[in-house]
Length: 383
Image (cartoon, rainbow, N blue to C red; front, side, top):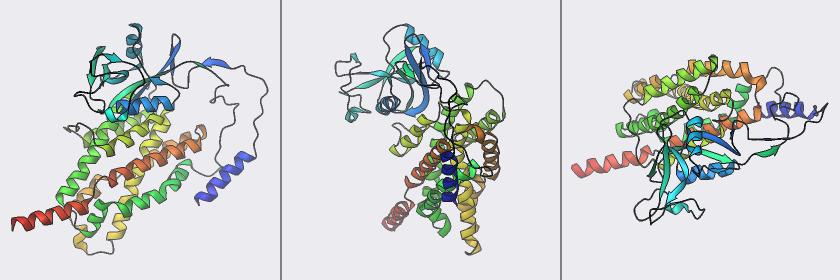
């Protein structure tokens, strides 16, 4: 079915050719959603990243991690940000404890402060500059030079990909990642433990803590994004409900330091989303809800043929109750359907698929079989 949808979509594109009734002269512009201050373009990314990763992500957008060269640039940071979360800036301290902005940086130094380098952070609301371990996760600001661009890609006269009438973008998004969802179901050691009834309390608790740590970080990003919305509409309403749901899952959570490696890539993938239109934020967030919805159904289906005692397992009941997201999937679907004519289907499909892969990394980060072996060895030793 996916191949049919995509082939129809490609066919629709091949039948259309762009026609311009007038020539529009290029103008000196910043990239979309970047702001021009003086002679530089700036963009604030409320995305949790280490210093070196933030620098790499800025580079991928054609910019650099922001440097502080003038007092006025502190004011720019205050105008760009609306958060108390510290942001990375493009400086670090070497062995002599002098701030440096040169490019002689290697990832081998990332996260070290003793006898090596610490990286520059700033608290936006106070303007205070501090050093921090470079492997910590913080938000960041990128900057670039203005450049001559062709006419605005959002101009309605420009060719936009279209979906064949009657095909829902939400269905295309799910179809593009359904194989990955099936793979997660079969590869997750937590889910195998729930199906067999052999999941340990330690394994289950560790997985839930991992999820809460991820949701805690995403909620911080989401809060900043929502604060930047000035229009009160259905998208903002759903985003607020998602934020409340995520916060409920991580009340009293104390994030680990340094952050685990498995957490960093899923958070960094928001770099490609936060400057997009808000409907694409929903696309990214919907991947988790769709996966949880799918896993609940598949797990219920698999255990339907097993002894009733497995379905009465405490951890199974707890996990099923926590992940009943049917109402969320419906709300995501309805809103994306309402906005799909204004969206680039290729972009939406790629964003959804990337964030489905994020969930895969969360399940792969825990090996319940190893933990069961440890408990067996411990029991044997005690005996």
